[in-house]
Length: 269
Image (cartoon, rainbow, N blue to C red):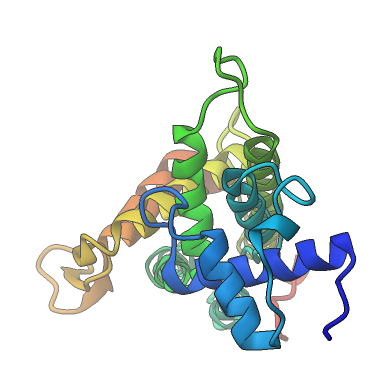
């Protein structure tokens, strides 16, 4: 006879199997596909342990909805943010930059706009955790607000906090990255704009594109653009690259107080 699991052991087993199911199927319309019977079946198939509703209701969760919100919160809390490949790509581009002239530094910035950001958005949209996090924003927005008469379940509040923590982690990583780019290329935000505001603007654009990319693949399709009127040489851009460059042009400028090339060493050198 299989020994009975402790309360917290059973909770963890069911939540982790719910997370696996959520990653496989994504958020459809709400969290309706993450049901107790389906999770019970997966647990039994994976471990041979049979779980019944009687062992869950009241003992662990008051309702299936509470369970579903906990599964979503668990996934968001464990989701990674900035992809390591994006940071490595930034290092490669910075290491090859011509930092001896202002035009060379701005040219490197343009390359970062059209290559790295496009890569970050496209790769992000293909990561299961990232897609679920974006869907969670919509799911939580559709849930009752704490101020509503009906109230808001504790699970929703946990998801809200998990999303807030996730976005803050992502913003901090972007700030580190943008500080690195600014120090290497001699750039700064235009007064009175703060770097955090720039990071939030770029992050929001990237998340919006990632949400739409499945339905509008043209966001990522290459667009051939002449480097200047009357010239034959061209650059490969994308809609998301144009969007980021527009934000950069509005919020970033050359730093007149930059100490020069010797002040910073490109990553990876």
